[in-house]
Image 1: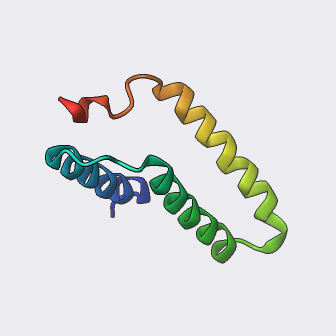
Image 2: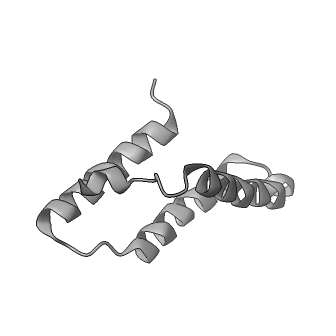
Length: 80
């Protein structure tokens, strides 16, 4: 079974490629909001209330870690 990351990332990459191929503007803040909402739903529905704050802090830290780790490499390859 695929990791959740792979499933979600495949959807995001397909939508990015489609938008770029059509010359459409990508509304990154909207996409980030929608993905954030999914993450919040997962935390609220998948963990006991007493763990919510800890998981939210963990999610924030992981976002920062991945952002620093991936840096400029990111998904710039999609533009080529």
